Image (cartoon, rainbow, N blue to C red; front, side, top):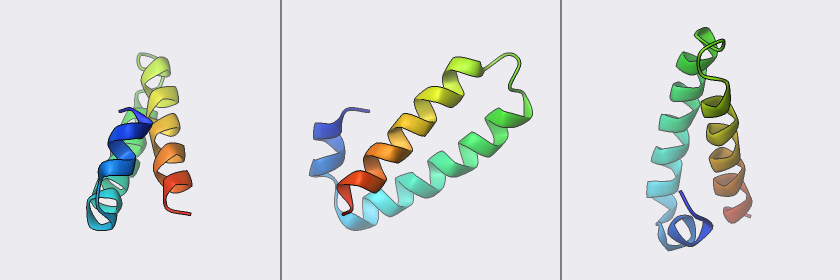
Length: 54
């Protein structure tokens, strides 16, 4: 997900996406040995959403 896409989202959409990503991160961490790059990408998207909320 690109920063431009996040900026265009409404606050409610951002909160919903943030919750979804946090749940996905938890699930992915349980199987971290196979999905290392996926964890990094999820963390980056979460950081972008949190940064755009400020």
